[in-house]
View 1 (cartoon, rainbow, N blue to C red):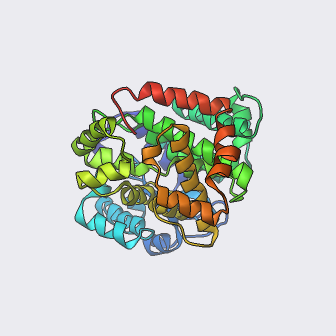
View 2: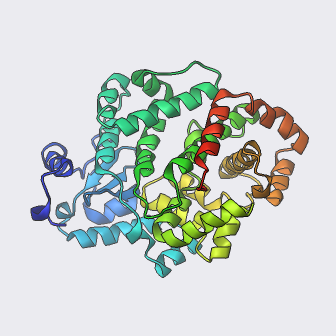
View 3: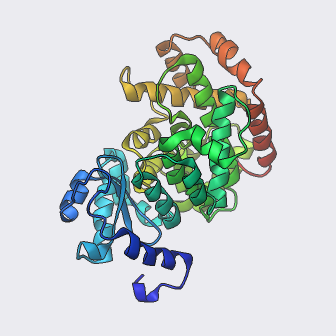
Length: 384
């Protein structure tokens, strides 16, 4: 779309604001690194993502978020998008890379909301984390405000604290890093899917439950020291969204099958003959600018984990959260027994100790009971 064809919308006004306030953005305001053209940008930047207005966002080595417009590099918009696609592929595994060559996954994925990108940029541009100031930006996006308060309460209740109803308090509780990740991911829940059976609300409830369980488990087993456990656990299955976008009719058909036969999503997608949600999720995570480690976790969450390393520990936690989530939802047929047994050995647990120390206490958590009831209520005629 050319500038002449833009309509006078909020996005058009945002584009005008970009021109006035942000300048060329080739220099990082946080660390003063100067990027000399596209070669340095694509060699030194990370977490590339195209927004809904055709602007390219990326992260500087210092963590700040920058944006680039095609005319700043004196290239056509099509060339900028071509360069961006190459950047997205840099963090992909070989199987996912081959998949992007076989089917046009990137072309079918929605681009990141420009309004969310703007909020994220303003958040990271200021080295100080000021919940009062940030709350004024978040309040402009009611959906995002709801997500922030919900995420803060899931974490608060997992830690045995009281309910949070104030946006400023919620922002102070989750912190800058987690807010950055939440902004980067929250817009996905508003994607318009071309399916009849895939329910985004149900998907989000399942994602929240998985994230909550991951935090609950980590508080007891101390597998990782990360503060973003909830986020990378709750978005493990974004590949299912991609299946609904790229293969809507096929996805609808096996969702119907899931209602009749007690099999796992992975078994259903395999029978349907479409790419598995691990690879599709890996591609989407790269396209939407998630951190490389999160991309790797999404790609491997149904793969037996390596024996050591920081990624292995995070993967153990994610996989254990998935298995326990099926226990909580009383879905024994969906549990990968091979993976469960492998995890029990690696973590020096037994099935009885897992049930006694993790699963049974989870059933006493009010937030788990609430999410479980909402999922069961939403499952009439749907699956996720």
